[in-house]
Image 1 (tube, rainbow, N blue to C red):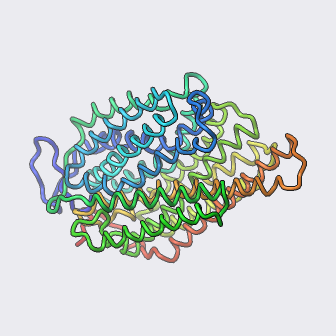
Image 2: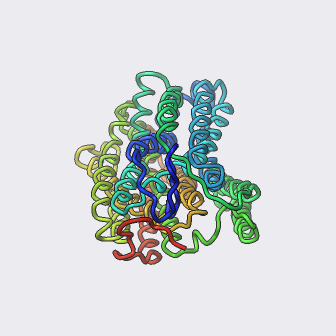
Image 3: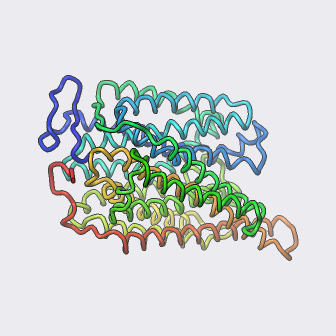
Length: 497
């Protein structure tokens, strides 16, 4: 973290500008990477398992989407509070509590006997993930203060942020086909146990000092606003955009989010200090992250349905078919870490958004029997390359120069924008998809061929809107971010202010 003192157990404390690199920082990075992967992939690992879980627990079609959104909404809505708790309570302590709670919530979900129990478990996963993720990222910024090493560390984080969703789809396919859907949740227990065992001796503690009060009203209002907004989008899919319920929930969400801004302006200990997002570069990075998340989550959701429903892939086949995105992310993340110190963040982010949008637009050309090798494979690789070139500089840009006291809040905001964007984007794209399918079927004879054609048409529309969101992300970077090559730190700490 910029200007933060990192002290290992038994080691002397150093000042912000003279602290030596932590001797076990690369091993600690591996622990942090595992925790981040677990949090990110849990947003998508249940996608492929959802049909089995729905049948086993008797979940209705109208309610099954809450298996996904209960997680992402709790995660995104509480991340800001989690970041402040990590700052003041201690980042290592928060990391360990978050990891333990995440494992226990996973156990509850894996043993669920009703739909409500599964929804509650997923929400608890999101809540503990909101402690775990910002603490992990804040620890990463503590451990790596030198520019070249920081770029490499963020390359690891960026690859996980961009590719973790695809890994979740693959792992979900393996566990669903060869074990049981419940293992998509239970698998977190041994992973968390290993991470905790290594984190205790290897990860250093750090905390901010000063005002340690928490903005609980802000956390409640912003979470309620986001839930209301997503529920409004969901109602639009059922009742239409002009329905009273739809307009009411969307309006309530907007009012609550506006109230959140007022609370933050008047609070002596705000959940989100507005100075963090009012910085032009950082605000542009957060807006880009929100829009990329909205397009990305929707792409993975509809792509896995296209594989299984239209192309009739088995769960494992659907998971394997999603791997090209991850491959593209990993390739681009490595290249971005090398290019960022020379080119700066902005050129890479603009190029990444352009590539990702191209990949999404290629997906709008699918039909009922599209070839995987000649069409779906290159489209996913291009999408993955774009995401990799976006996430690595985005993560660094959002955190470089953040004052020590706000480091946890800034890292939480970065995570929150991706999850909130994913929640809003999934709900919005699903509404467009549902409306497109219904419109296509009007006046056509109801038969199996027409049904498949309607589904494909809906996926095309969803991918088109996903591309539009990613294009907007590129425009946000182009017009808001003003970082130049010489703005990237060349060594030492990056404390500012």
